[in-house]
View 1 (tube, rainbow, N blue to C red):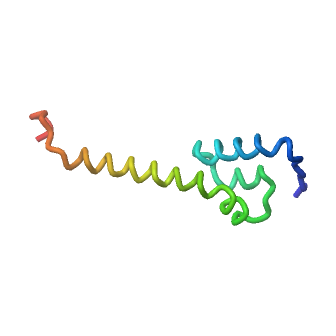
View 2: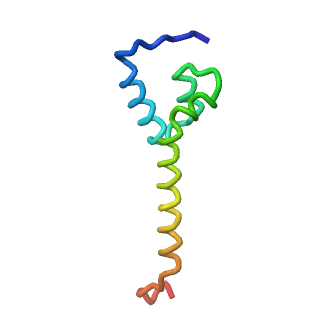
View 3: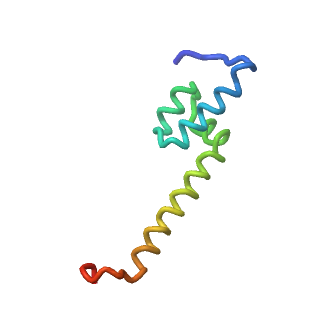
Length: 79
């Protein structure tokens, strides 16, 4: 594996790009590989806040589906 060093001037762009990848439903393994981290733990510790947001979004989407399923329909065809 090629070791890549990132100078401090490009670090903010790397952080933004990584957060976009992680919140954009890119495969975590692919993101880890692109960053050049040897261990997934490194990536997950640094960017855990981005993944927590995805977890909240997933929970909200699931709750929305459950709420719709438990709401009586006004459409006679669905009764």
